[in-house]
Figure (cartoon, rainbow, N blue to C red):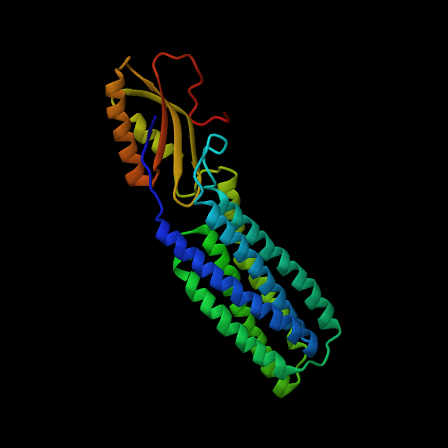
Length: 304
């Protein structure tokens, strides 16, 4: 069995944690202000934005906890440690994003049928505050979101909320100067559709990782063919490829050799296989079971 490892840097994790803490407190303040403002003004879009902001707070807390858990070392009871904590956090955050969106759609349809007069000045000022607060949080998390599914889930919550606040601001201006109060419901509905669109892809990707599906970018048959091309190798079977977390992709396979080779020769071949799959497919954990003359199924991929 052979492995090559990539390790994350603790300083970078600390920076991510600090940025998450700042974003959490910013969104708590925004949520409180929007709930009070929404109740006073009667604006559903402002209350819906507050609900989304509250989901932001929850998602950021989940992301922060996951970020801390990832640093904990593995043990005999947890041999992988908490390496999948951030993937689980991404799944939970994506799911809540879609649930919140469905609730907003229901409320928007009900309010559209019975539009109400809204105190637009309060809506305008609070939406500006939310845009500034969420905009700052988005900037804090943008870099980390490009390479980490957990941070991307938190980033998407904040980005969609900033966009929602922009929509609320536009709606407030239309209500103030044109008395188009039905716009409040239409904007709420649009915000909800946008949340579903943004959250679905992340939910799908995190589900694939949790279910140990082969990453979309890795063609298993190509890997089998390339390993089979080695002169010493007769057959490659019982192949499994899965993504453990953001940094680790694992390959497990049984390899049937033409000859009863020595252990030192096997190590040489293993290093070649590791180099091949890492350079072409970014697979950085390889577990190979060598075989010679073993009577077992030789299918390429099996269930167990």
